[in-house]
Figure 1 (tube, rainbow, N blue to C red):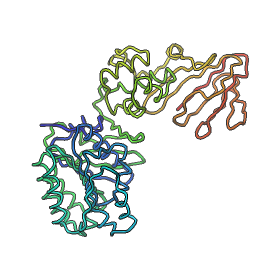
Figure 2 (cartoon, rainbow, N blue to C red; figure 1 turned 30 degrees about the vertical axis):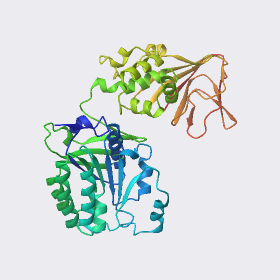
Figure 3 (cartoon, one colour; figure 1 turned 90 degrees about the vertical axis):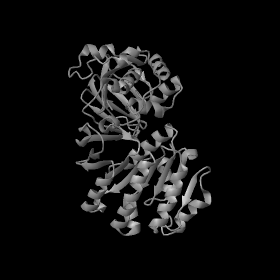
Figure 4 (cartoon, one colour; figure 1 turned 60 degrees about the vertical axis):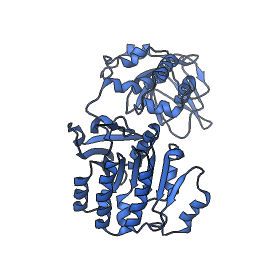
Length: 418
């Protein structure tokens, strides 16, 4: 069975990827960031040189394109607009998009989207012209039901289209807002489709589990798996964690030891900061050449990243471990990495006696907390100077410190948490 990646490496092993011919129904709740699963799938499809057809019933072309603008490849992308003349009621606000259609965009505006048979024929004609392996996004079954005012019509469309797309060797995503549909409707869809994935939120945590995985032997996907969203990246927690998949966190740890930003590392190896960010979150894998360049730029052996025998999960972090990780930030100032995992990064900043640093300690790409463990330190924030004694802390969010000074005659140590 030929397999296709979802574009989310941490999800693929849990559901055994997507099979060519699969219709994937996503049953989603509000706040589950489901659009990122769509976007990553679109990105992956373009990376595989595949055509993508996006059929929108629920959102205007402008709102959809804004979400995927940075990944869309117009040469391989077709947008079928069932929204403007449908739920959009031909409102001028939506129609004016067609006055300035982005150059190169292949867009089809359906003038009578309430006519199910007409919509079906247009999509059939389009799919028949595409090469095998094309990908389709139906956004959404809920929008169809709102427009056609009938679960029966929506079900009739799905029961016809789903087997047809399977025979064409297409991979199709279907979005369904679970609270908007009856249990009977959802049960009928599960009977026909090949894959059903449930996204839900409990106590501010996001979860994914499979409700149907046709032709898969492994039952891992049917267990709830927590997932996290970082920017536009999705990371699904898996019980089958392999050491080789943890290269990203090791790259991040080595970069932080060098007090190097993602942009600085990207510039050194001729890649983009976005690539480095995705690599560190294990969203993508580097080529061999890029991997070796990254190792050289970080001054580490490639074997360090590939060694599965490292004791990364030790609960004890000794003083010696911290001391040997010290890297200079400036004359008389060092930074030692204490801990770096998916939750936070902890460093020890050491300032020599009477040392002054006329900038902040880090690139400050997320909120930080600095706790004075030893010594007396003066910090300047927004032009205001503040003396800090041992036990005092500083929270750095919007205003970044412009200077730090050790006011004592001995070394000062600060614990930095980000």
